[in-house]
Image: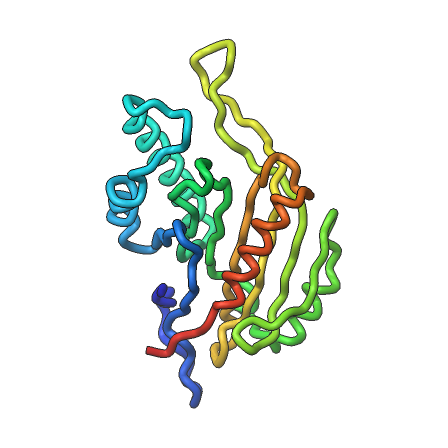
Length: 227
């Protein structure tokens, strides 16, 4: 569960807005909070959740693998926080001897912060916008209207240069699915749930589709908490 507190007082309306949200995660996935407790969560993952390493990595290289994973997680967490992230979710245990390359971020959105518009109108406008190479559809999340976008994109990833001891940026094709969700009883506040994966290298493959279906199943468990 993540506390949905972004440093502002709830509006003076009769119905109180939610204070948090809840998701049911697949086995092997973890939550990294981005507003506070990030360092502690990363330490727990490094020493508790990453006791296994992919097949083919020698025992002597296990600690180096974990430290490399730690650096990657830190980079992902910093990037997600810069983009308004509340929480970062990703798999940290191998399945079938391999680690899944996938993650999703729950973030706040600036929609309607200056002039709040009816959620239905905003969702309709977003659904009508062109999504290059993808689709935008109206869906229900937690019993209320929301938006789902599914499209291809590119992800900039650091890779060692084969000819020198330097790091270069490599653009990887990724499959992205975004949900845009209004916060109930709190005009002008929205969150997004943003999923990305390179899949097996083919963003339209059956394997990649399975990962997208897994993410959609997670979003189907989303609910608001008022405690």
